[in-house]
Length: 550
Image 1 (tube, rainbow, N blue to C red):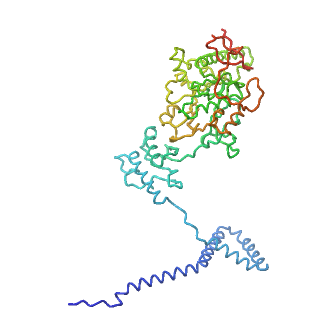
Image 2 (spheres, rainbow, N blue to C red):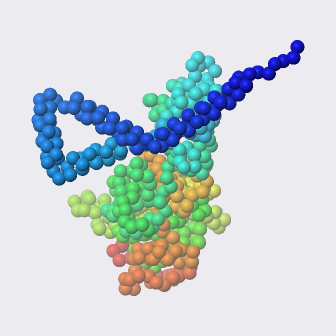
Image 3 (cartoon, rainbow, N blue to C red):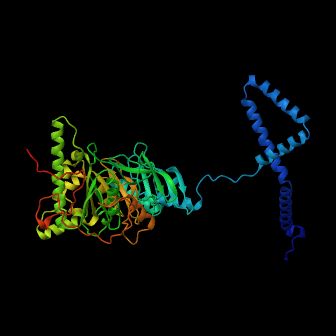
C-alpha cells in the first residue's frame, strides 16, 4: 500500500510557527528600544512614589499637617514663578530618569573559577579536619564548601587573599604541629610567594587567613623621634604595635608603625641577639643601632667577620674602637668587663653616700659584636679564650651599669653561641629567608605568618622578651663606603655620623676603602702587653676603669 504525502499545512506548520516567533521577538525588541526612555521614567516615578509613601508613613501624625502646608506653599510659589511649572516638570523627569536607570547587578558570590578553587581547597582540608567516626562531619569528600567557608575575597588574578573557615571542635588547635599542617595546606593551595597571616579563634572554632602586604623598604636611616633609651629596630604592620614615629620616605613624610626597643636600667630586655643569613641584614641592623646609640652614648664595635662594614665609624666621636682582629677584640672586651665593674662600684658607693650615681656611669655604653663565631674559631685555633666568655660581666650586670650588648650571628654558626649569650639576650631578631622551625628556634615562638623564599635586606621577624612575634623591616643603613650604595642612602648615613676626633663637625665626604687599625694610644685605657694593646681612644667624659676595691 503506497504512502500518501502529508498535507502541506502540516509539513510547513512548524517553520511558520518558528518564523512567527522570531518576528514577534524582533518586534518586541524594537518596541523595547523605542520605549526604553518611557520605561526608565515610569520605573523612576514608581520608585519616587514608593519613597514618598514610605516617608509619609514614617512622619508622625502631629507633623503631617505642617508638612502638607509647607508642600502646598512650595507648589504655590512654583506655580507663580516664570516657567516654574515647566522647570518643576523637567526636574521631576530628571529625578525619575536617574532613579529608574539600570544599575549593574552587584556581585553576590564567587564566579565559577573561584568556586572551583574553593572546592579544591575544601577537598584538601578533608584529611586534616575530619574523623571517620564523626556522624556529621563538616569536611567530607564531595561536600559543600559554602557550609564552612565565609568572607572570601580574591585579587584581580583570581588568587585568594582573605578567607574565614570553620573547623570542628575536636580539631586539636592547641597543638602547634596540627596548626602547622593546616597552615601548610592553606599556603600551598592559596598560592605561594606571598605572606599569609593565620588568626586562630580557639573559642569560636574559626580560622581567618589573610594575605599581608609587603613592608615598605623606602625608609632609610634618619633621626627618629625617640627619647634616650629607645632604639627603633625597624618597622612592622600597623595592627602589630601601638606606636608610630614620623619618618621621611621616598614619597614624603609619613607616620610608620615602629618596633621600639627600650634599654637601660628599667628595661626587661637589656640585650639583643640577631641571627640571619648572609646578606639578610644583620650588619645593616648593627649599623642602624650604632647610629642611634651615638646620639646619647658610646659604642664599641667588634667585627668578627672582618669585612670592613663598620669603616665609616672608625675615629668618630663616641666610637671607642672598631676592632677586626682577635687580639684587639679580646682586649676590648676585657676592658668592657672592667668598665662594667667600675660603673657598678662607683654607682654603689654613690648610693651608699646618699648621692646620685656619677654621670659617667649613666652614659650608655653599647657593645656591638658581629660574628663572634668566627673569632671563637680563631681563638680555639690559637689557644686563646673565646671572646664570648668575656661577655659574662656585661651580660649579667649590664642593665644596672647602662651597658647594652648586641650580638649578631648567622644561622650556620648559631650553634657556636654560648649559653650565657642565649640566656641573657631576651630581645631576638631573625632576618632573611629561613624555615619556620629555624625562626621559631631563634625567637622561641613560631611566627604567625608564612615566611617567603625571597626577602629584601633587613626583612625578618622580631620578638621582644615574651611579647608577640612581629614582622620587621630594618631601615636601609648600608655602608656609605660601598660602591654599590645609592647616593641617597649614602648621604643619609653620612649625615648621621658624628664628626671625627680633632676635626670640625660637618658632612663627611672622605671615603675610606677599608678599616685601618690605629696605632697605640699615648693614653691607653688598659695596661696590657704591647702585643695585645687595643685600639681604644681616650674619650672625653668616659673615665678609665679602675681596679675594683673591696
